[in-house]
Image 1 (tube, rainbow, N blue to C red):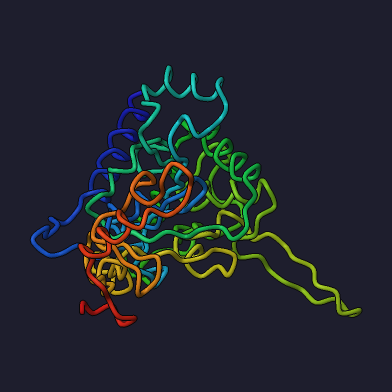
Image 2: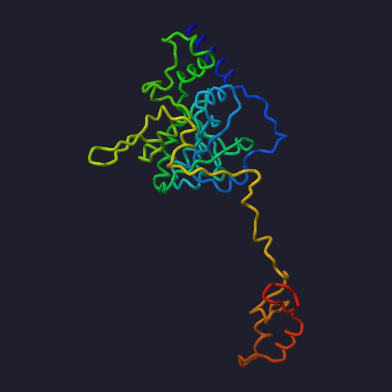
Length: 312
């Protein structure tokens, strides 16, 4: 029992050390607009995060990518359209029906659910599965929800710690098994593994292997989900990359700059304009014919415009 307690404390100390983050400089403008991301994000989207912790620096080193973490966006609870599942999440996890949530596997916490706003100050990117059906989207979300409470892969934790040491100094029997086919336990997971398994459960490809047979047929083989890293969702041709930069050069709201001649000018055609919109009573008499007097009075008060939109 004492040995178990020592091991637990040691793993806790390693976890805290790896999760320690550098202090962010919030005085700089963020690279992505969290407000726009919240407006556009859909259930089933994969969120990539550029982390700042020690473990993030290790992942950047071994994957040669800035993306160090991935999370699955499941949407708001009322979007699940599954009352028993909603009740389960509310009762077991104290969630709110109208708040957007993500599911992720975290070092030291396991598979957990958090509000999307947790990453409001981070550099984010969305990877959207192309053509994923609404039914399969719900199945992917359910798969991730069913994984809530699973432990983070402890072997993965130790492997990441080993990566902090020069590879040549590590005895062969201690070298990382992070990317071996049987690393860890089935009830333990890491962030990309859990999400990859969720998509593979509906036969949606992430980065499959393709093989051409002698008769020119193509066979696809799902990649071992334990080999997936956050960058694989970025590289995958089956996911669209959606960026919401803080300064979006394409989002200029051009309609606000259209050359309107006047905000209170209405036209039937370029030679028939009014400063105020005439009512039916003004425009026609009781017999349904045009009222010459009201029409002439309205035209006298109107401002004409030419086809270029300039007042004359």
